[in-house]
Length: 209
Image (tube, rainbow, N blue to C red):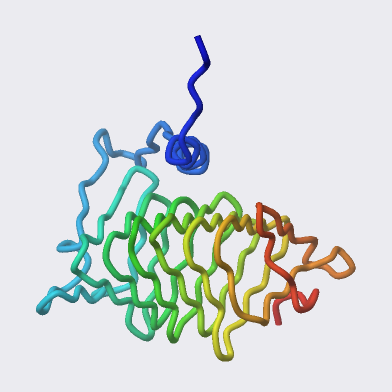
């Protein structure tokens, strides 16, 4: 009997499971149960738009979901720090700061860094899945993290992406735009890695300013 061939979807799922691992949750000290959290706990809903209320840190055991048809805005002056999981099926608008240490999963949604800074630190995974769009127009620092693109990733206008300290950008679909700086080890910020079936092209080797 002929062996079965894996579908492209099956292969995508295998990749997804690799980059979106299951972990044993880490509870905060003196907490026997992870505190529950939702968008309603950290943001104000007006119409179909949630707006972050204050500087917020997601714990390693916490997950928030942005549903399809809704948007989540991080307004100027605030920071969302993520040690847990963010599952975006809607839209995330960044006017301030996202600092990521674990999983930011663009799950058929749209992420727009239109006025802020996204920092993906060591241990952080930004997964832009099929049918997902990620747009950067300002500052993006991949400081030892992983960016995995299966969808559409664009770096537009005056946007800058810095890939350094063993940061990795794996591209298997569409990656457009300029101002991608991939450190080459000649400075203090280490090296960056560009790979995938369609590795993006760096325009320079600058470290972050």
